[in-house]
Image (cartoon, rainbow, N blue to C red; front, side):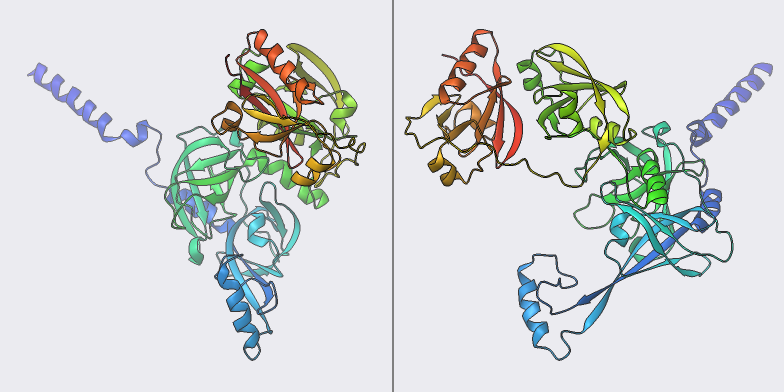
Length: 480
């Protein structure tokens, strides 16, 4: 009897354990308490923009910009009575209150170009909002309303503590339906979706749809760890792939927009590219890491510090640079005017330089034209790497529409089956450097490629100008 009693007790314990797997995994039985607490601080944002339909170049609502039907509808609307009358186009999005005095966060694309912005609260209150500042690069905007009483608000959390598999809750205004709560997990972190230079998105399968833009992504402590901003979907509806700007990225931007009305990011003055395995091998690196400097802005902080094209930045201000995409965020978060140590790989050696961080400029002026080209010369094409090479002269510059300030060796034709074609090099490109040494003639290119081959290199690093845009390309060296 005692044995049967003991077995029954053990069975009951096992059943109890298996009956509560959600608790064992840390999953909540319900999100109701969390939703009830957080929803009042999440708002709907409605915007309106005045368009003059029928005006030349004005977009037609419901049609994508550039659509072939736009021209037809422009003509049609201009022929209609009152076709030139301005009309309002409205859109909806989401946002959330972070300060009881009326500071609201949303996406830049929700309020961009809006003539009027209204914030709708869950209790039915509607308030007009003004834009304190916005940042297209991270798609974050800060609004302010003037409430007659303190507003319910939510706290920002630390997204760096979030892990793949953590539960998250999204609250927003999908399809204009009003406050809607969805839940899921963090599917991935550090996502780059080519939305901007500071991509570092949290990916989630919590349902995010049109109208959720600008809404918060909460952890189970009720803290905002992301600003919902984008989805991937062929239909426009949620397929379980949504993206949020991490709070670690958004918070510095929010503070700057609140204080200055604009962002104040650090600026290094370089154009960079990814260090691929082939490029790493060409540079004699043990592993592909860091950010390869493709171009240095004349007069910028990097040039003044002695950073050169071909350097690989592996450390900035004591912070490791694992890959190219990490450097812009590290530099942007560095205080303007600070002098920081920057470590680069140059010719296989580590070089440490002092860089005084500048302020990022929206557009950089192009360098003034350099020396005029030499007199026209007639040259037989030189062949290497599957490329036919020629001298740069007045005729070739006119033929390929090349600016006077581009110097190097012209690619006149490309063997479709050659190694250079594999890397996208095409006629009209200009080879500026080979193995980090400047070249002025086709024979320079041939000699440098041969020298790399004699060193046992399987590929050679070229600095190529395409339509004035410089990039490093590692090209396989043909045998024989």
